Length: 158
Image (tube, rainbow, N blue to C red; front, side, top):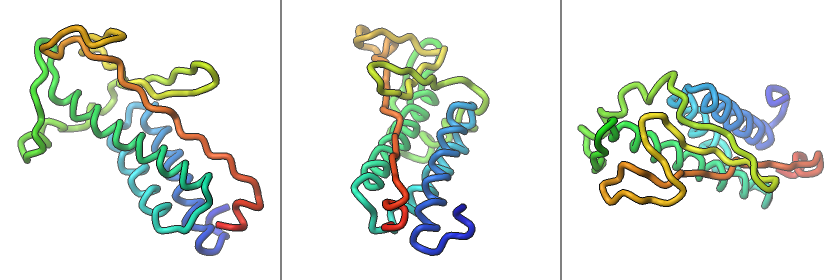
């Protein structure tokens, strides 16, 4: 569909599809692929003057990308026994390594008609509220799963 479209619809459709592929990668444990696809999709969407629905979708996808990036940093910094602070220097980024490739770090949950991505790696202990001042028991981190509802008239007006 996006191949035959003209700009700006082509870029919008391609960006939306890349964001969807990124979410698919995330739930199939390809965290690096997730960040790359969502990042590229958002780059395309940010270039377009868009409707309120598409702008809301972009904001939600921005939140997902930030969530995945932040939780990847946290995962890289935690071992079975401790979590170290990552300060953004080059050594910190080396800890990301292969972005936990193949490890199931995220699950999808539904509650009250809202779907959320939940960060839940097996090597970090979680509780409903943060209990441990040393950071070993973490509050469960979630982000709403983006929803985009467009009608044909919205597509034509992109």
